[in-house]
Amino acid sequence: MRCDTVWYNAHLMTLDAAGNGLGVIRDGVVASVQGHIVHVGPASAAPVFAADERIDCNGRWISPGLIDCHTHLVYAGNRAGEFEQRLQGASYADIARAGGGIVSTVRATRAASEAELLAASLPRLDAMLAEGVTTLEIKSGYGLTLVDEAKQLHVARQLGQLRKVEVVRTFLGAHAIPPGRDGQDYIDEVCQVMIPAIAAQALAEAVDVFCENIAFSPAQAQQVFEAAQRHGLAIKIHAEQLSNQHGAELAARFGALSADHVEHLDDAGIAAMRTAGTTAVLLPGAFYFTRDTTLPPIGKLREAGVALALATDSNPGTSPLTSPLLAMNMAATLFRMTVDECIAGFTREAARALGRHGRIGRLATGLECNLAIWNIEAPADLVYRMGFNPLHARVFRGEPAP
Ligand code: DI6
Ligand code: FE
Image 1 (cartoon, rainbow, N blue to C red):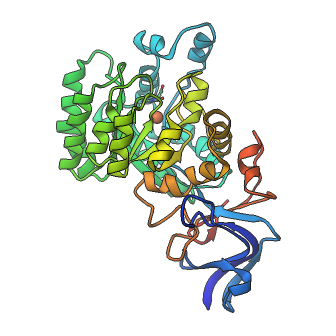
Image 2: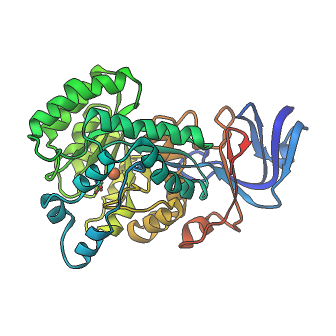
Image 3: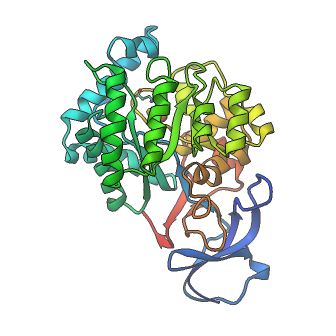
């Protein structure tokens, strides 16, 4: 079989097995042509390859490139001061109500140029790539004017042009009520002005809404979803993070790709997500950093067969985290997710949350050849250790990617 590159003498986590397992193939091979996988399987059953390049992996493990399906990576400033306030007892909601929180990052982001935003965001992206990320989602949501939301999304696109990574963009204009604005007036502007412009300029492929008692109501979220559907944008939601607003159920009714956080999700919301095929995106970094005590209903989601994705939720307020590996450890340690679920959560299931299940997130013929090659003895090593990065090499669309 002719191919551009073949990786051999490796153990594979294909994430392409029946059920939700890792689909492990010991002593396997992966071959690619023009950035796509053309063969995955045991070396013992492999064809003879006529390869331009043959890479001996020396017994290392290969997984699909990691996918971070929920980040707020592009922003200016930081919130270390609020972190100290929280250490002295202030809650996240107290700080938000006092005009801090998201709004303080909005002020810094509005004041920053695109170049300054790019310079601030690039180190955070590089930290993700260093841990094997090949695809990540980046939301707007710190501009809260069309110009500043577009500025964030332009920078997100530039990040994907400067590095070997796919950036998937989401418009989160409905992240917070801008200072001095009436919430309903602002949501009307999001729906009647911003979403049409974002769609017309192809600045994002999905919308997201912070549906919460300190942000936007289910009725306002529905307005945003209706506008998104009118303009061909997919739907995501920050739902049930601090309370049960029934946002996930609403989003599922609109065919949402994902409902994210979902600590306060109830049985009706689980059933609606199952029916709609909406993925639950669990965000253990925010749970940990805000010292949350309400666990997402993971056992019920598992029993219902709702897909479970994981993400860093990388943002300056509730999850200043750029380590998918640490997020995996938190998901196992805090949420009691299994090793298989944690690795699937940052590969196969994260691809599903981005509407890319058929393109990335598995080692399977026809999918993009995005690989992470690891110096580990077993898959559990990826989830078990904290603050240790065993990545050997990253491959993006068949090419070595620093
Ligand atoms: N929920 C979160 O945890 C982040 N946004 C959201 O809707 C927090 C973002 C921030 O605090 O800057
Ligand atoms: Fe978030």
